[in-house]
Length: 214
Ligand code: DX5
Image (tube, rainbow, N blue to C red; front, side, top):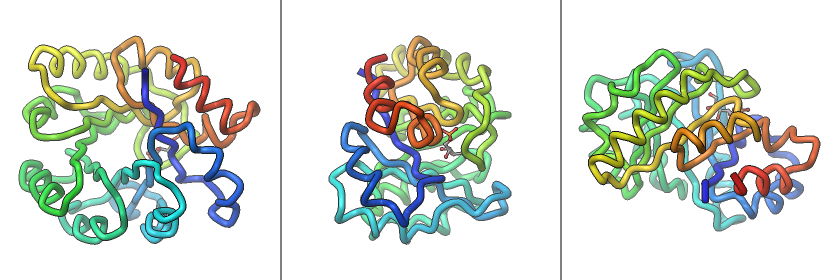
């Protein structure tokens, strides 16, 4: 069964008491962290992680859309974040960053943005727990799904399966019932959705339920 990570980038944190209980059927919460340099947006304040930590048992992952990710790792370890994802485009020393993330007791994920080919992260798939394929240009919620992501998911699926690697494939951006179905067919393990969950006319719980059934 496919896993669902609820992206809370555009959630109203004043109303967390309303939506957090409704995320119970999700598998994870994803926090989008941005530095206004790697992407032109400010993203979430990392304090949201420690705020929510005591209020839910859900798995926490953080998506670093920042330059110099190595400078951010330590501050995430103490917040209750369990998986830290960095962008391959933001570093020329991915192995050192993966090691640093794991030294701080977190699982490591590596992300590729819209313009980056899947093979760019092939050399690291045996070192990380997750490979994130962006299906929009990182930085903003509510964008349209870019179907180029499907070929990347398929290529990663083949590489991971042929090497019997223990690495999840995650997709993020423009995920709704239709695009999610295409991603599941291509071999994705985890769907990240923000708008598709929080702005779903059927409501948060139904949105998650429908995605998980794919
Ligand atoms: C964009 C973020 C996405 C976003 C969710 O850079 O990484 O996770 O919050 O996107 P939508 O709203 O398209 O699901």
